[in-house]
Amino acid sequence: RICPISCTGVLFYFSGYLGYFVLGFYLYRFPIRLNAITMLLLFALSPVVYLFNKYFGWNLDFYGAFWYLGIFCVLQCVVWYQIVSKGVSWLKTTSIMNSSALSVLSKCTFGIYLFHIFFMRTIIWNIELLYSLHPLMQLVIIIILTFILSLSATYIIAKTPLGKYVVGCRL
Image 1: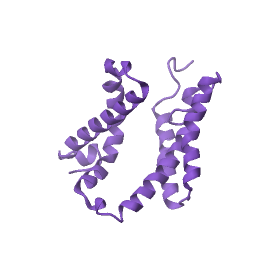
Image 2: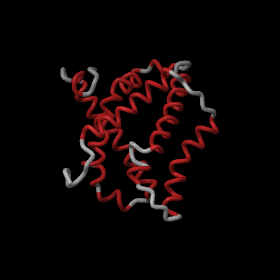
Image 3: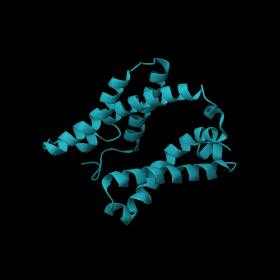
Image 4: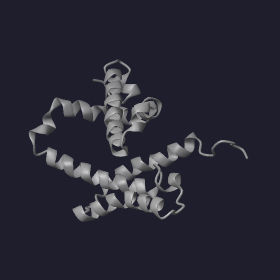
């Protein structure tokens, strides 16, 4: 065996995740209109299949089915894209769209994306107190902490001259 630990190298992840950029461009260029019921069903499909997998003892490979490059994650991305697109269309009709906080958040989104997994895996998942909480509470705290830490790091770096090159924006 050539690679004793894992045969999924950096190129595998780059080429796989590149598909999400292509998917985003495709959805932007050729919009599909999903009604609320269809979006709800697609959104609920992933957790339902996951729960059925656990409850009925199916042997679905977690990383193959539910991880970032699995079909259920792609379905979630399509639904989230639809939700965000509709949300942005609605925001354009309000004064919220002109807020400076929203402008900063918008500029920092790429940096947040870059940092989120780092903070989640190296800091947040190592907080022992989280493991004593209810799983739903864990999820909420992990999301909030990940967002705050990622946004803070991106904002600080974006204030430096190298911000444009490191996190994709200069504030």
